[in-house]
Length: 267
Image (tube, rainbow, N blue to C red; front, top):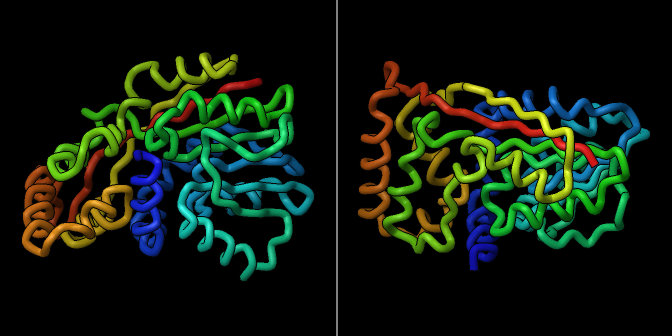
């Protein structure tokens, strides 16, 4: 049920995801690449690749002799990434709709596994990490970034606001994997060693209330619930969310604090 929820939600969010999140996620992506240490000619799997924000940056890092496979549970996200690759005549990449907990890929096929802000949405994150471990070569590395601690993310109340309107069994807690040493323990359980982690503090900036609501309500997994609401319910959700971030208002816009956790493990 949670997989169906995530698939439908991200399909709804696909069209506006990049526009709403590209700049906001830049600090997380920078931290991911700093820790991953990607080299020319490497083979990469990008798990929960979305529209390819990390994938295409990784392709630049590995060059023409490298190869990347991007997988995501949302076929709409995958279609956008494929369209971008085809439009730029990229031949060393392919994108597929695939379940992160059951990768239909060969053992020991990749040098690097990347997962940017995807683990917290997967029903079985440890199982997904075990699958990444399986498809990595000996000496390969897995680098993942998740949202950090709830009390460090000023937009965190979106969970309870949306959670009132959907079963908690299918709407994940974004912050479970970023709490204390949870992600490190997950990597160890999946088989990885030489774990290193890094926390990154940042701000999500928006020019208006409309931009802030659109990012959180239309451009993420909450989109499935949000778009099913009546106009009056949508207005109530927007008002409640804006009230929860009022302390971060700057002029007509917002500067909302956030935290990311990046972790690297080796096979």
